[in-house]
Length: 442
Ligand code: HSE
Image (cartoon, rainbow, N blue to C red):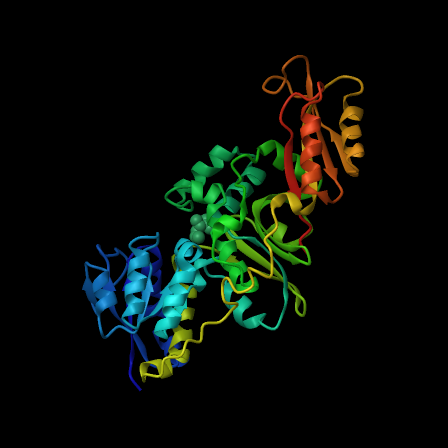
């Protein structure tokens, strides 16, 4: 049996974690590998201050690794789309198996890359691309593979979760909490990806493709970020027994598939509502297994390395025959795009949900009844109604304005939206209505 050689491209945070964990756990890993395997070649423009790479060949051109005939598994850990896409394609073309932590690459080009890998008889693995160290891809493709997946509801962006946690626990504004996240190195280089939900939509797209066979195309996912979530709403929600979390939701029903990323209120007594800070959590509900919750670090050098190394170990078991020349892909999970035609992705207007509304109402007799009358005419049942202390200043156009916080029973989103338009047109309503969805995660 030949020894498997691993090539690593990029030597940033994640790759540094892979090298260090690989070296530290070398003896443990030896007992778990299907065949002997070693890091042999690293491609990186610069060294990592906390990594000892003396034992490996190091190239400054990452493509040298993709062209190295001795490398069997290439780890793409550079991130971004280019040159990562070209590198992965060249590695596949040269008959190498690829492990990547790159969610953007998989969410945008995964179908073409998986097709290229299948055609070449090699594998493309990406456990680390979603929720860092949490083995959520293995859960979907292995542990829960006997289930029809009813829903996936996840906190899949650690930066967003950190910001919302800081806002609730320390009463900070969104801008202050974001500045903290950046100072601590949690936010992506461009924080828009985290706070506007793009990162979470890419991850949800990957999970939905594996669970439902939908296409790897993040543009199908309704995406709303957390930049408009105010400390005031976090406080009101808390007083009613809810936490506001940024969720990625894929839910199947006879009407189609919901795919949405947005902030939502979750009752505080749900486990996922108590996942705080940079932690991620993914609740998967299978028809056979019922509700489950996976929780852990969604980012960071060693948690992400944990997922990358697990993919490498898997490959050392499944590619045994490949190295001997019998190329057969063992890629697991639904084939992305497979069920897309069968399961229509629903628009956000079609979903049924309960809602939190905050209305800036004039502090005058009859204001409340005018608002609730619009809801009643739309057949929207009010679940609770709280008139908060009057606010002076910012929202008050004339006289005093009182925030009225309502929660509704479940209704269709299109119905809710048209009712909200009517509420906003009332003379007693002084500002845009804040609308947040309420999710009851099982
Ligand atoms: N920026 C991501 C997050 C990290 O905050 O979750 C890795 O995907």
